[in-house]
Amino acid sequence: MFKRILAIAATIGLVLSGVVANAAPKPKPYSPSQTVADRCGYDTRLKGQAAAVQIFLLSSRYCNGPARVVDSKMSTKQPKSKLSAAGDYADLVQCKLPQPSNAIEFRGFPNGNVDYYAKKRHPAAGSLIQVIGISAKDAPAGKLSPSQEYKFYLDATRAWFNNVNNSPNPVTIRVSDKWYDLGEDIAQYKLTHKPFPSRAAEISQKILSIADADIDFTGVGYVLVVLPAATPFKIAEQSGLRGGQTAEGQIFNMSVAMQPNFSPDQRSNWAGFLSLGMWIHELYHPGFNMGDQLGDAQWNFENRGMGQWGMFASGTTDMLHWHKWLAGFTTDSQVKCAPKESATTTWLAPGSTKTSKQKMVVIPLSSTEAIVVESVRATGLNYKLSIPEQGALVYTLDMKDLRYDYGYEVQMPKERERIRYRYAMSNSPLKKGESLTYKGVTITNVEWGDFGDVIRVEPAR
Image 1 (cartoon, rainbow, N blue to C red):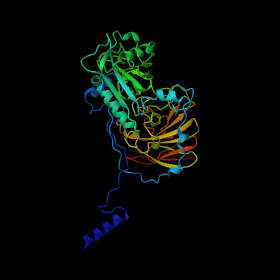
Image 2: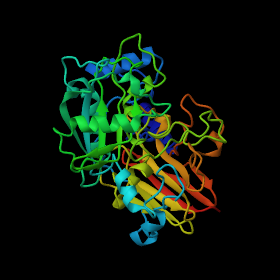
Image 3: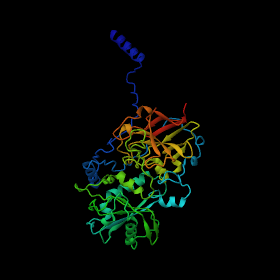
């Protein structure tokens, strides 16, 4: 009897304390998953040329960055927050900030010379990229074809285009799989990233003329020249070209890729372009040049630019969704235009996960300035991100700041301002419950999960 009384008393005590025997444990708070968890860290899953790239870059003290595209399925889970109705948002045209007429880079949507904009808009949704292999007396071809020597880069770039492109217009990379002999030394053209080669127009036209008899250039928006992989860096390096005339018309966008020469004695200021992120990054400067967004590259907060966020900053993360929108990869249906005068709640799917769901909310502050929010998870090309780097990435656009490397600025909660991280501003994304205010607009992450982030936009109180 005494033991029974003790048992009853113990049960009553558990109930009063809020603990019930055999009760289901409380669910753990959501935490993003991570794998490598280091943007420049060693990836054990790489094989073949991808592994050789990693060894070369890390041994040369460069960042290898992401080297594959992780094909992550969209989570079947959905947020519980009440989302805004379609009528709560502004007309999308208000968020399509127009291209500044005097800008060197492409920052906004067509405004004025639409024909020139369209000709330069490559690589983008619907682009046809023609790869041409060029050998020379001082850059002789080996036994392997261009598609074999550049297999890692071509396959990974195709995978990236497929991952980011939500439009019905695929990007096609076509290889003329032979080496076209230049018939002379290529070193004389001084192909390097900087300074821009003075004879770029001459060598561009010569390459196109040599290949013109074999290649139908109809519809080609971009020509990528590749050299034999064993070509020393002192002979040629990654370089922009000028384009030229073919039997089928004018080529407006053209460049030479960095050759994958992994010999230990090879040294170049531009060897870091052999990382996949930077290899893709450099495709854009001679074509749809969206510039760089490094700020002063000292990242002392005041002049931070995008820190190390975005393919056009350090190349260690995926392309920003503003740029994907400009390139047509992100479609209008995936963007919400939130007015600054009223409150909206928007669900954003992870930006680097392949899905047709909404990917970006834009808050126009004026015809030249806006706030952008996108969801960041360790998926797609962002698979190397650590837990603290995941959440809702907030940045601002200023079309009036036309300084090179400026006009974009990553934002973060005040308590994280001026704190230096290994990768500049890498801890900027908002986690659940966090908010920031910019020019009278408060952005709050109200819910998050594998499904992405739910973003509340409202006038500051």
